[in-house]
Structure formats: C-alpha cells, structure tokens
Image 1 (cartoon, rainbow, N blue to C red):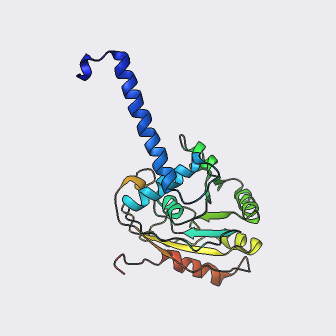
Image 2 (tube, rainbow, N blue to C red):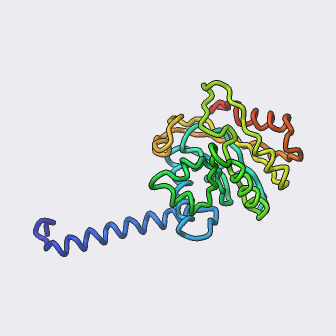
Image 3 (spheres, helix red, strand yellow):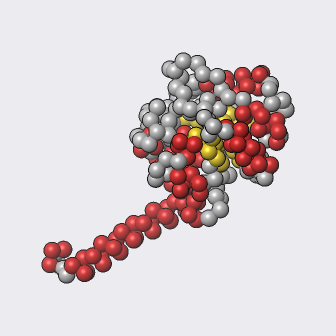
Length: 236
C-alpha cells in the first residue's frame, strides 16, 4: 500500500516507530563502543560515539593511554580544534574531567553536556585559581584531569605561546603523573564546532608519563612543551 493511501494516524505511528528504532540503534551503538565508565548509560553512550567518530571519520588507530587502573593522572595535549577532546576521550579507558574556559562551558546547547561530564570551568578573567582548586580536589579523589596547557587553540603556524604552569602545580600537589599527547593531522585546524565532522586522518603521539615534584620546575615545563609542540609526520 502506498504511503499516500495510508490513514494519517498509521503514517504517524509508523514514522514514530522508525524514529524510535533509529534512536535506539544510536544509543545501543554508543553503549557497545564505550570503553570508559562515566557513571551511567546516559554518558557512556557518548563515550562510545566519541570513539566511533574518531575511528571511522578521523582514522584514529587504537592508541590507548597507559593510564593507571586507579588513582590520579593528568593528560595534557596541544590544542588545534574542537575535535581534540574527543580524540583524548578515545585514547582513554577512564573518564576525563576537562578544564575548559568558562565561555565554552556556558555555551548555549552544550552547557548541560559539559556539566554532566564533570568539566571544570576556568574563569580566565576572574578567578582562575578556583579551577585549580577544583581540579586538585578531583585528583585527590583519584580522578583523571585533562587540559590544554596553551590555554586556547594554538596552531603550529601561530607565534610561540608559553604553556601555563598550572599543570606543574597540580602534579606536584597531588603526585599525579602527567601524560603528554601530541595531536597531528586534524584538517579543520582552528575550527570548534565543525571539526568533529570533517573527515581527516589523525594521529596521536603518546609520550611517556612525567613525574613532577616541584611546582615551578622549568625543565619539566620545557619537556611538556617539547612533547606537545613537536610535529610528528603522519608517515613516520
């Protein structure tokens, strides 16, 4: 029977069942692909979809961070686009609590997600120290913090920008190892919202964890800078 000859009530019911079925497939696919437990299926399916997007749209190979099974850790990376958090999530078998700028945390339509995911807003124009206190508390409770120590998107072609020392303070205060990550191959460099949906071939370079004992150790800061700022050819 042609669609146009069906009663409107039956058409509406059929469309509703199709939409419901598609939504269930989306949720189930995300839950099946999830590898980190974020505390419930409402977030775990997002973890799974982050991994699916990074694998099939961005060509990310299985490159797991060698995080401890439990206890605090800090993951740091260069920041080139809005895709970067998804790549870091895809490399982690534990949930990550991101430090993000307050203006991004409060972005319309995204605030609910950032809040549920435990992101920590950084008020760069007001009280940035509050974010460090919140991050320190999370580390002391055995969680994993993720941050971009340049403080904003910074491309290799941009003028040099010093990385911020907050990562040293957090590591020295809590004894958390620091895991530097280098991101290469993102096609949508400088883009925020569109970057996750632009196909490319991304590579992560995972460096050995660093143990930092002094909150003002410039040699450790330089080592982190070298790890996240040195480009790695995709063919290597």
